[in-house]
Length: 439
Image (cartoon, rainbow, N blue to C red; front, side, top):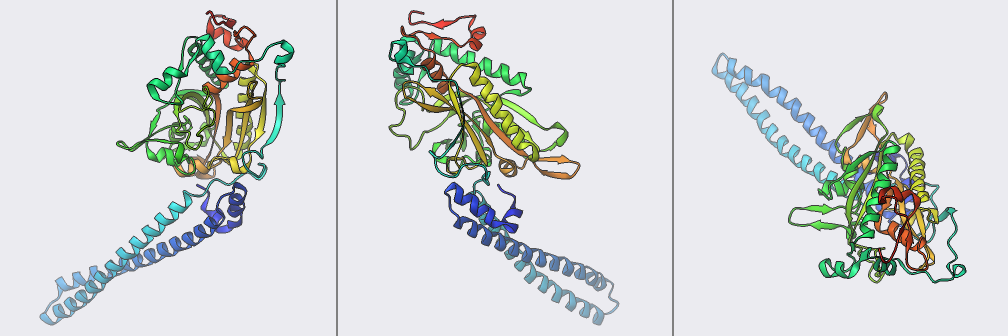
């Protein structure tokens, strides 16, 4: 959620953000009207409630006078006055209840509209859709396999040759877009997990193993029940959701809390299995393990002062770069365009690895600055010398296992189908230097 004060003082700022995202500008007009209606309804309720309190204070003394009345005439007079006020109070009570219901409905209507509004975009983000990103840097050079004298195999052919990936049995057991990592594939994922957690803890992040089932409040609070809802798995009987990223339980970890600013920044590294429906991706990446329904991921998450959020964003990106550098994979860093941001992100950087058999770069990590958006929804605040106020949250993928495995297999393959293991992973594989087809 965005600071409501911005809506009241600078609604054009929200309109411009919506325009840059390619989302409804008219929604802000509806929001302005709903905000006015809510405040007017609340003011009317407050006025009637105050009138009710004043009337109640008048009734009390009259009831006391009735009890003390010395004769019938005085009692009759006092009773008449009490009856008149009681009748007035009854009518006022009905009006208070009606005004309270109206104010409640106006608040619900306003809240429902706020849930449709995405975070304010950073004005430095490129404007446009999925293909309108800005390339910030390219690192490493793709191998010239033709010069080496062989045509590269894709990751699935390599995985089957090495006994590392089994999509056929994955489909038999669970359906399309599921897979098994077997033998070297399983060992490679465990090595990646160890490397990621070793790096994270070296930088002071607190390791976490998070729940994969969460309540609607956590999913909604992080912004995954809006435009991303079609990709979320819901367990209807229990009204719970399977997470598509440990960002959700990490964001919810401090929901409804006030954190002492002296503890900030708080940085976590969460490991979890992740689940995505991949709705709308029919026919895309059907071969292999690039686009799947279940995968494991290590996600970084930060709580910090709002004024420190941009510096934290740069820090998360640097840590992602360190991890990918260690894997000796060519990659590029892009500044994601406004129309391709998630609803919570004000700005997002992606790192894309070179995939030789596709002749293109594919996303393997991303990091987003969500400013105060998620914190306001989840009621997470900080207390400092200036009082209590919302803090900022950020997230960054350190390692999404399947896509990183794809990049390692394809970029480090040899002509005989073997795959050289990056130096950084060898300590977690008993010093092993290569996966071979006959291993």
